[in-house]
Image 1 (tube, helix red, strand yellow):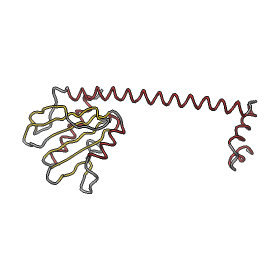
Image 2 (cartoon, one colour):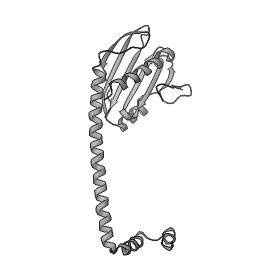
Image 3 (cartoon, helix red, strand yellow):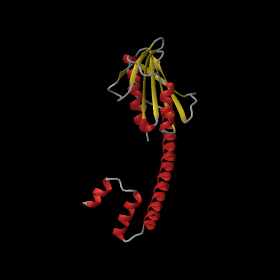
Image 4 (cartoon, rainbow, N blue to C red):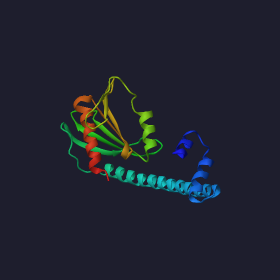
Length: 197
């Protein structure tokens, strides 16, 4: 009980280590050396894990990008007769690739774009710098979750969403939000999940 009270009043760390060491028959220098060794091992393991995670993310991102690009058949939303899949031209640090889907049908502005990134930070930069800013006129859709839509003056309906666990940003455009961009982004989200590794 007295040791706990002593810790609460602000004992220097060396004193705490000395008390703990005396309990186990170790000197202060032995404890410090052991702590440093463990700290170094933890730091090295963290660095290796982060590197492997980034490499794995790039591999799965490339696989996802190719799966989106090579899609042959899709169940299109109502009102859209066919779709042309093409490689986009966007340039952005960390952007693995862009896949554009241009829809044929009654809406000549109907378009869906997948932006596949190598990592979370690159997707975050794109989200912050290239998508429309927050607007009080925007609405969040129930499905897909967290997709936001707004009418863009002069260009029609716009919906976008950031699928953070896949580092993908999905953008849908049409003549209007209702029955246009909102239907396309729902379709795009389902399609992404159907081809995702």
